[in-house]
Image 1 (cartoon, rainbow, N blue to C red):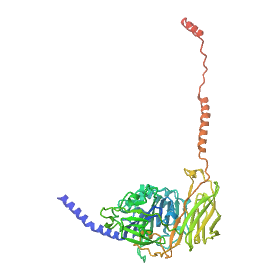
Image 2: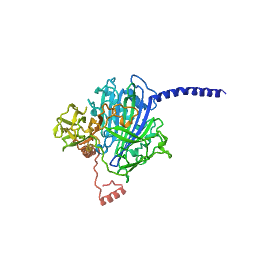
Image 3: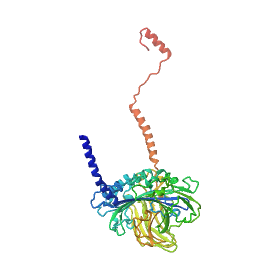
Image 4: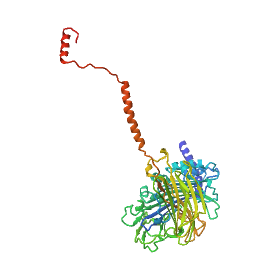
Length: 579
């Protein structure tokens, strides 16, 4: 009986404590929100561009000494990073492949090949460099990447580029750090911790499609994490922390092994959708049907009556919408497998207004020249661009050879900032504000000299070459339609990443290709030859000397003849000493 009474009291206490926990959770649910969406854009080449975006918004304050202990949707590991290192904005991306702008158009969230990290710190940070170094080591462990190789030799402090994307007017670039690792290889060990940051992981919702063996068998793959403070409403009376996880992938028609111009969720990801993430307030799939108003180019099944229009990258696009929170979307089979069947390959893609590329010229291993080309494809309007170029210290720039040519004439920059490198301490930093004439190609050239490294500074495969990070071009590109200046929570995620302050233009960021430069490389087989020769000399010389010093010599008499031996036998028998 006493045991039953104790159990009853424990049950009563448990039942009494449930409503208070529920109240805490309900209060937390009001302050937190999670959305997920997938945008699929059929490309005219027959390829498919798929863009996943997951957004978690939490109305809390990591600063001002507040210790946040309860995490529900927002990942605790990133929340502790924000609080410990006083981070105001954090943007990190891992990309495999190069985005082909002229074939695929502009991506929703651009990123360079390799790894990219740029962080804005709070003005309360006293030693930014030490905090930056410690932060890169922590992020290296969280995302299982080589971010610990970021040091002063590849870290920049831009003066005009990479303005904050969240709220806040503080633009003191002393608290900004930017670094890239163009040789970083992206694989499954980077994707797994990225998926674990999602509230539902990869168990439900759109994240079930993120199958590594399919994602990495593609022409382009990029995953990124963006943390910034955003406004809760139009008046921006209250702010929240936004965590946006994006994954972009382009599936190639030929490498996928498909003989037909036909795509489906199962063919792309080897899985179908059965439910939305239970923690998501919105879960939608958008199919871009702007170039297919009468289903002349491709057929979409199952069809949906929901259509939505959004202004994306200066153009008004039309999308077919599938709401995964509605049970009608899955039909009677409780499974959604979208399918696109191409009918015609005709049609012209809208050329992007801004495009850039970069390459290296020259011969030999002493000098060379870097060429950066920026294309303005607008027929009658010019617009400014901000070019950021980072060159490692072992490529010594001749800044007096810098030339900017547009339509055969010199194009003088209205703003230029150059920070020379220091050997083994910091890279070159070049920022220029240029005006691109309409329908023109602007070429920026600068000569350089290759340095001779110490033999311990070469990579394990020095003959492969050394990578130089991509150039970054930021610009306000003219828009064909009026842009939405007020970003609200109801807008699609793919159209609300970059803030817009003007209706006549939109912000675009373009990355060029990374460069692969050969440096003077010594003959690394020479140490092996020296070691072999030295060992041979030591073995022969020392071995002979050792034998001479340690071996004992004795004189042996020659063997007696047969007659003498017989005589000695006879003398022994007679008791006479032998001869």
